[in-house]
Image 1 (cartoon, rainbow, N blue to C red):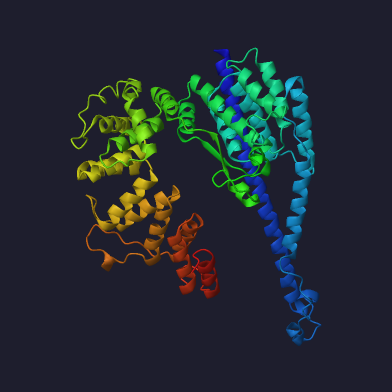
Image 2: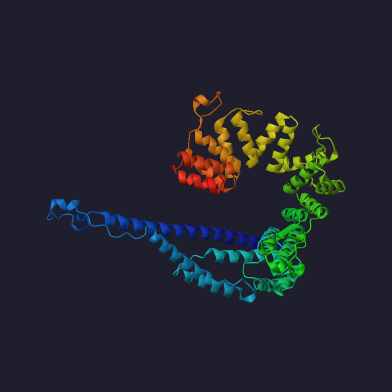
Length: 551
């Protein structure tokens, strides 16, 4: 209908604005780097000019009147200024310009003044960069928010609702501020929602209530203002997830289910958080100092796995593969004979046991009609395991879900089903799942589990997994490149030679270290100590070993 179509157009306008914001940020960063580079080049050219012989600087090209020895005469080197002074000046100039840009406040779009506000803002931004017409990142992000809010709250667009819910959850995890400006930023949105309320496809009463509560400084849970902001945004996120789910978003139900399953905890960062407890330690009863107060955790949402299962069921009914995988993994864990006996595991298994069969929630299609009737592997010993296996199989084979394929591959490997292990692992790797690429790389490297030994394929797997953020794959790819593979190292005709590239190896080690890999830092230290892939520097090696490895 008209509203749905308009909502989609508005949502796409928001996405386009976000893309423009990204491009504006990239262009801005490139301009800063270019200015700094040009300043550095200018400084270096001045230095080169000072170092030229006097004859080159003062004698004309065709002037032969000067003595021939003049070309050996050089000017006394003037006192050189700091090498980076030009760059520093450029950075200071850029910083001042940034402060000027930030001073231009782009008001949030509202009511009948929208077009005039937009025009005024455009004119303001245009004048910042000496008349340039390009808009900055902040401008596009403001426009993206305006369109996203309209798509979500006025037209009920499910993807817009989920995006705004994710943003609210992010604010709940940080300082609770909508845009870093405190409570005032909610006022305009409240007024807009009141205007849209009449025609909105979603009920806005609850949202308006949440927004007004922060504007009125209500103490919703007695935590203190900062934690009340967090609590508000948590409630807003949950409300928007529920509304988005009812509007047809499986992702909304899945995200809500995870919140309900895990609960929500924040650290108390301000003394006002524990004022109601007279700043006493909950365990010992002793008065807490500032550091102890800061370390206190507040449970803003208690876990409720029964409610979470209802949300997951709704996500599964909408075809959400992530929900199928998560619930399936819980079934398999509870069905395993060696499952732990902790209270949390017992509660989870009790809820799963008393929950109606989630398999019935899977939407029927021609492709999956035989999933429920397919004979389960013989190593599945109970109904819990069979339910879990069916859910994972559906996510894996009907949705190409990488984690589900990988989980099934390991399950078959555990039960000595080598053929199915290879089929599942190869499929998971082919769709780019990092864990599967890493494992397949090791199979190629060692020539095991049905894979031929092939160092080149191993390296390709490691590199692709590394590009997907797999830290151990970065180290493995670096190790292969560091030493290379010579033809005499290859034990079979299937092995391919890998050219040595120690510089690339060093870069992979360093990236792995920056992402938390101790082995990555150890290899970085070794590279600096030996001068392999990077200029040798024992001082740097010792410094990294001391600071990153505590050696």
